[in-house]
Length: 145
Image 1 (cartoon, rainbow, N blue to C red):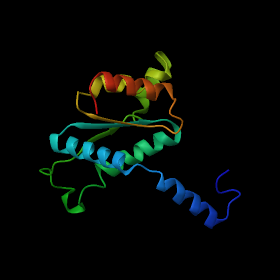
Image 2: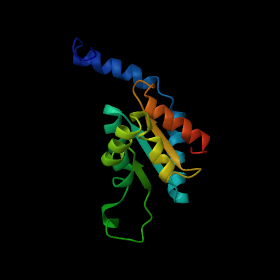
Image 3: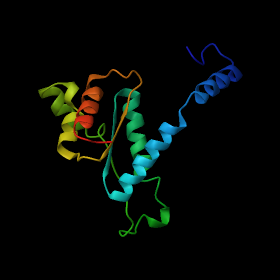
Image 4: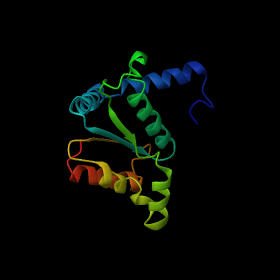
């Protein structure tokens, strides 16, 4: 396991090797899409399972609150990014999972809230979670970014 059998220096070197593999253009395109959604007052939706679900919630908070200047918290005239983590609506998730299946918990929320050109961010460590993939397919079919 990474970190369990490595020295701190070896672990950090391994992390640096992984960071060097990142495609910064992908990150810049995502950043541009999020900013354009802000400018156009469109929604950004985020989802994921397990740890990726926690990342979804945290990223939502980072985008929704942490991008604001604290002096603007009480200023209702300040435009804010419309961002929602689909992992945070527990009653909705449980109702869909119980009645229709866990693979529908994200896509059904998108059906309620999303519009073409909104931004959809799916976070997945494995890349094969049926509920995340179903939401990605729906988002692509309905022209979300």
